[in-house]
Length: 212
Image (cartoon, rainbow, N blue to C red; front, side):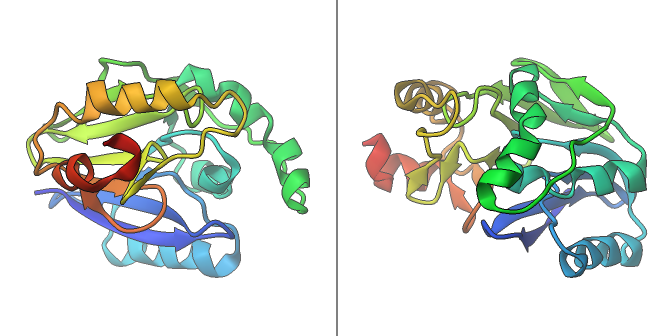
């Protein structure tokens, strides 16, 4: 049985997730930890649960989702999974930091590109990958059909969708991706977003004002 633990990080109240199972194998998703306190909270949880971090996953590479990426890579020494279309977003990290008024070093990590239709496996639990651009060019969603949940990044939120006024954002593309790839899934599917509270596909189909 998979369990998920969230941590709210940085100036954007970004959700960093740890996904883990009874074998203590785990994935770290969107490490947004920005300061010592946030990093310590994540690190302490991993140590207390005696977790073995096997992968680092990115839903996308906007600054608020990768502020702890170098720390995560240096600490756990496992590859970073992300979509190739967001490589240029990751490469703009220093410039993004300047826009927000603080310095950020470029990251040096080992990257494994994931694509639409790929599957990742955590001890037999399969995760399908959907490429849903529009918020960022390489936004992906990680979906576990067996336990009916997904990690959606900034594609879909409770009552909202990701911003589309950022670099290579596209409103129509995002709406179309949500409707054709996510809204066809079981309505009971839980959605763990990059910001805010968890929601469900059924709730968003019924109530999300952007997707009526």
